[in-house]
Length: 323
Image 1 (tube, rainbow, N blue to C red):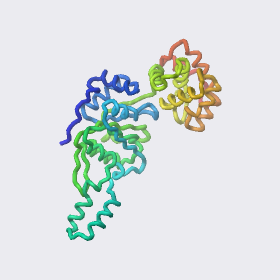
Image 2: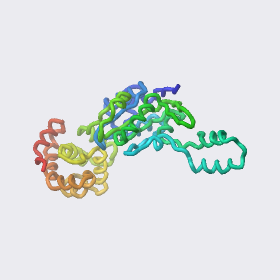
Image 3: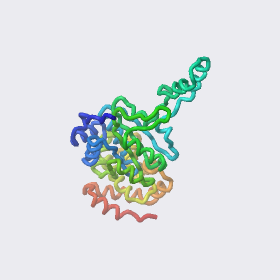
């Protein structure tokens, strides 16, 4: 039977988890820290959903860094099959061994047993996680991009932490990994998969949280520019866009403005760096034509009022209507 992972010292208690993640540069609120705590204590996978760029994948990365274990990542995509995720046979090495065995008088069954043994096995992410010497963090990233057939295969892995290899037999986990699944909701996941997981939704951050993240990730930025950037992001996310910018875009934009030696936002600065925010041509045209000046005016108007959700809503209502 697989050994359940012992609770890491850094993750004993919700405040400790929040502090451990903060030390790794991740600003975690209590909801995130609680979800990680329950996932570790209950030995259950954690399914994290939310829009692209809000920090879902980063949760798994900083978990591994905080507890000092390996991060094993399985990037999902359409057409991902079991062998790519689990294992493949090293055919070149098998063919070489078959050539060497031709001159021997061993029975065929014995030869087959040799070439279909663990030394000839190429372990892919799922098998690596199951056979690891210590409990790793297994990140199954963007699981919604995989096919439903692959999702069904995951059920066996996440239920019993074991896999079946026809030539070898059943391989059971030595240590149950800490599992994090992420989804951008490009398709609905099955109820069966959801039942096997704890659930966490990560939304776009509030102004204060985003400002804290910018200060942590871009420490050389001046306070005025940081606040203007975060205010602009709060409002631009209320605009109807094909691809709403997330925290990743906020940090890219902050770094770009710093690289160009801007100390405050103005129309020229926004125009020159708008490609850091907009990753869609129609979004780029819409913001440039209709929203740059109104949002900057709103940011200036809010500079002394604070950025409460109510204030963001009021300012957003004053922006031009969608065109």
